[in-house]
Image (tube, rainbow, N blue to C red; front, top):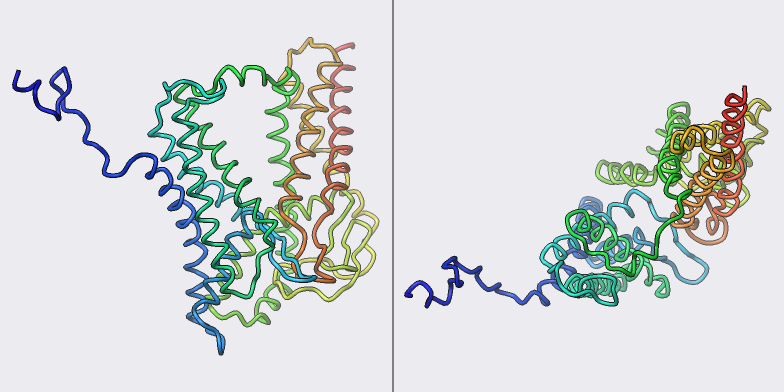
Length: 409
């Protein structure tokens, strides 16, 4: 009787958990703010340290702080610039890390939600949806703080583009967090039952994922090979930047973060559309046009101006070969005696998924580093997607047709 009368014990005599020092609603918002600010600090610290080791005359502490805030928003998809100058270039590694870090913070919030709560609109448990919304609000406050800090620096923000770090980046983070939560609990309501992918799409998912990995791997390998071949030019450009020790390290890290972007450029080079470093300096399998390049060391690996040897055009067969690999994987994902139509459909769907993903990644990566000749750089996303789709489908259907001919023998 005495034990039952203690307010800290429940009816079974076990100690009840202590009340949290902060309401869960406020805690979720604060975790959202902390998630954004911790991610911001990852950019602020090296930027400020670089400024401290190499300060510019007349600059104040506010300048690197504002520049770091601008860069943090840039890697999440925001655009910078004023007038004719626009900087819209997202190093995909940094963008992926920002979304991944945000998803870890969102997971911390969702782990405390009641997954047994009633569903809202037959979609998500009320507690899960409320926690996600409060975390989103906190993350939006962190983005607002960063946007205010950009006013201190010399890299102004294109305010209309703020919708991407406010909506798109946290939405992707929440999707990843909800996916982790769904592995341990049934949090998807009946409304999601209608979103069932067709059989061909479900079977094409694995071949498409494998094909995308191979395709991007080939592009990355081509970039590394070009850097090794042109190592002298790359190192000379690095010395000419005069970045110093810490600045040089940050410059190398920035180029490593942009390797997936360069891999997409290399893929566009293989597929045929090519890429441009500056306006008037287009590089493709037919040759490279000259132009005044930006002082970025890795661009020393771009081929010298002039026509390319005709044998180089055979590299266009590389995406076709990758398409054949996708076709082979598509055949494995269906029954051996499935109809030719089923096999071809799965192969084409897988190739289309790869091409669309490549185009979306190139579009998210951006294509502007300034004004005038730097206003349109990189690979054309639409033409790259269409060309890659065509070449992959040719290779995949060739493998499917060969398999059908072998079965008929």
